[in-house]
Structure formats: structure tokens, C-alpha cells
Amino acid sequence: MNSTTMLLAAQVNQASGPGLLDFFMRSGPAAKVVLLTLIGFSLISWAIMIGKLLQLRRAHKQTEQFLRIFHQSKRFSEVSAASAKLYASPLVGLFQAGYAEIDSQVKAGGGNEGTAATQGARYRIKSLDGVERSLRRALGVELLLLTKGTNFLATTAAASPFIGLFGTVWGIMVAFGDIGRTGSTSIVAVAPGIAEALVNTAAGLGAAIPALIGFNFFGNRVRRLRAEMEDFILEFMNLAERNFT
Image (cartoon, rainbow, N blue to C red; front, side):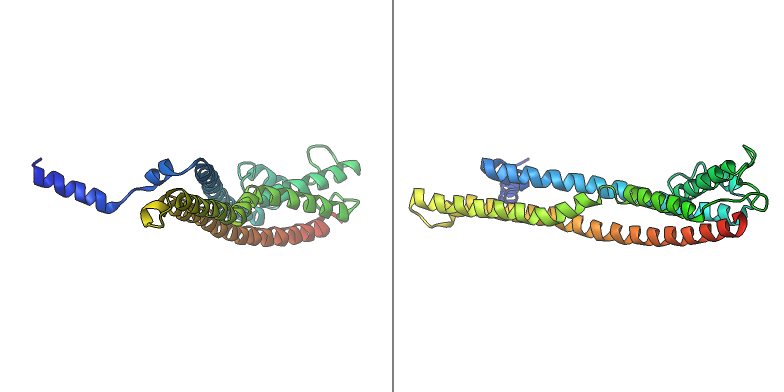
């Protein structure tokens, strides 16, 4: 490499300015703590969003498979056996809870063990309300599983801008301190503090914006799944009332 090429490369590097790592290394202890906190919030948020996206995709796919099985089968026992591998679907949890309650009530009424709740015309349940309560409890459990981790996204979206703002204020204080020590108001004197302020502001927004978008996106998906679960509860109750009362 000749001297002209080396000179051009140096000029390009100088023109490009310092990178994020340079800003981080040059910042003070308080700014580093703020940046590391925001980076941690961001990484955890992205991990939650990726995991939640995979979870909801599996739930949607297996829900469609379960509904086909549920509508094609003539007995609850057949549905229970066929849906054992579709545990990612929240409807499976609802069905298993309702099926277990019907089975226990039928057995308590004198049904034969192993064949209870499989032939609706021959067996009766004592409390339809008890079946509904079991389904509602299962609904709560499934919603907790679906929304697990999303509260952290809301916390990140709400807290990160303020954490970044704290770093911004701290950086401005550093800039004024540099002015007081040097007695100069030139850009060279205040640049480090201003750089800390701007980087912390950007980091706060960079952590908050994806978390907010993810929280709203997954909240909408969970609301749709909840509507499907509510519809399934009504359908299950209609079948239970028609065949076991």
C-alpha cells in the first residue's frame, strides 16, 4: 500500500468519526451504567419478542389442527387422544380441563371407569356450572402463559426513555463542568458531555421503541386468541349441555 492510499484511508476514517464503542469507552462511569442498563433492557426485550413470536406461531398452527380434530371427532375421548401432541394450542388446555371435569362428574354418578364421558347419551353430569368454572380457570391459566414476559416489554417501553433522559441530564452536567474547569465554551470543551447526552438519549429510544411495538403487537395477537378461546368455551358448553344433561 503506497503513501497516497494510506493517506486517503486515514482521511476516510477521520471523516467517519468515532463509533458507538468509542463513545462508550470515552464516557464517564454514570453514562456507562446508563448505557449498560439500556442495552440489558433491549437485549432482554428482543429475546422475549423472538420467543413470544415463535410461541404464538406454534399456538396458531396447532389451534387450527385441534379445531379440525374437534369438529371431526364424535367423542371427547377421541379428541383427547388425538390432541395430546398439540399442547402449544391454548384450546387444548381448555378442552382437557372441561373433559376432566365431565369425566369426574360422570364417574361420581356411577359411570364405568375408562368409558366415562365417551358416550353422551348414556351418562349425565350433575353441574354444568362446574364444567364452565373449570373452563374459566383454564382460560386464566392459558392467558397467563400467553402473556408471560409481555409486562417486561411494557416496563421497557415506559422506563427506557426516562433512563436515557437521566443519562442525557448527566451528560449536560458533565459538559457544564468541563466549561467550568477549562473556562472555555468551545465545542472541544463541551463535546464529551454533549456526546454522552446524545448517546444516552438515542439508547433510551432504541430500547423503548421496539419494546412498545412488540407489546402492542403481541397484545393484539393475544386478544385474538382470547376471542377464539371464548368462542370455544361456548361451543364446548353447548355440546356438554346437549349430550350430558
